[in-house]
Image (cartoon, rainbow, N blue to C red; front, side, top):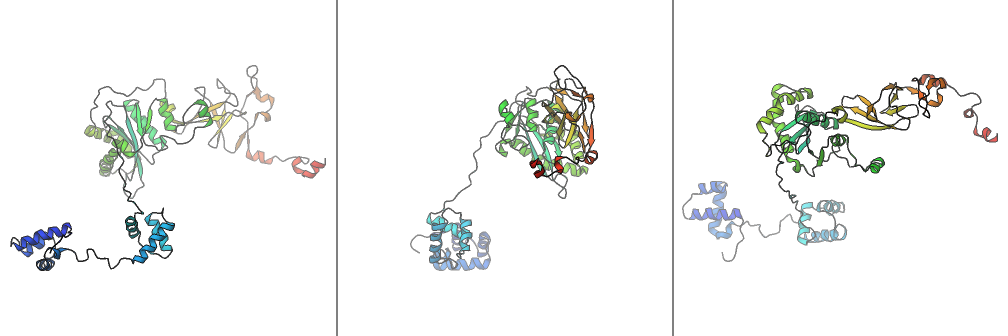
Length: 442
């Protein structure tokens, strides 16, 4: 056949095999195996090739309009309506809207029509360019921390979270399992790392609200020129640890890839040992698995100098890894915190004055400490359902005079129960018992 023929790759391969058949280099059985078609189909295709030549291999429907194609008038109506009403719509949403108007067309068909008319452009999702970063040179210079949510105790159990810390220079890892990726869990993980190695220079984290906060600074923070911090951020600030939030999971890929090691090896190790509790998993991590993993995978840093700092001798770790809140001391020397009332005792030295701020520290063991001028205060908790009598309701004999010019100090803690308070009734001539008209006329 004269002229040019457009052939697909499959048709060109078939042409080469059939030419070898013509030269008796193959049999039809062997040609069918090479083309991965049946003997009958190969024989029929070869017969048409012998009769029509190269053009006999071209698909008969090529260049012809499909029998299932939409009419040209319908296509024109759809394109005109798209230009008129849906020119800024995507193909999928536009197809749904057109169907509501009675013009039923598939979204991919509409996309092809729009591409042909120049009304739509292909939007390829290009991968973000990333620059390779070399490992840090010193142990403790940068430690990556992240949580891995997984069904650690089997597919029929609730997921738990493994808080994982990986040194960037060496790949040294330590971890802890908790129910969720909470502030307390991350604090305990960092505390364990510091007890083993010292205080790292910086932490590489994600942008979860455990590590960084997106809230606006309070008025007090604005006046002090401070940035808003989370409870974990405050603990790191006390230890001069810099928190570096990563912009993508790939940026802290060392800890992300290390999650896969735990999900592979640690999961099977717990299965072999029959461990099904968080306490048992943490015991295995602490006593054997992390050390075993570090011996196998950790590397020597490029520089011998360790960037970890020793723990300050005058700092109690419990005062660092805690939750801190500020409360105002009321006139009856009490503060309220989480539905509880705490009475500041008289024998505190120095004794705070009403209106001053008291620091409430909630330690990880749930113990509450009240701090004033870096000193712990003695206090007693007032039982729920009772009330501390305000200063104006207490008799003079219940106070001792303090220093000259100071306020009287409470001698004893006096409480009135709700039951006793309920018995009090206003007198017969109390204004509450009289109407507004009587008071106004008077």
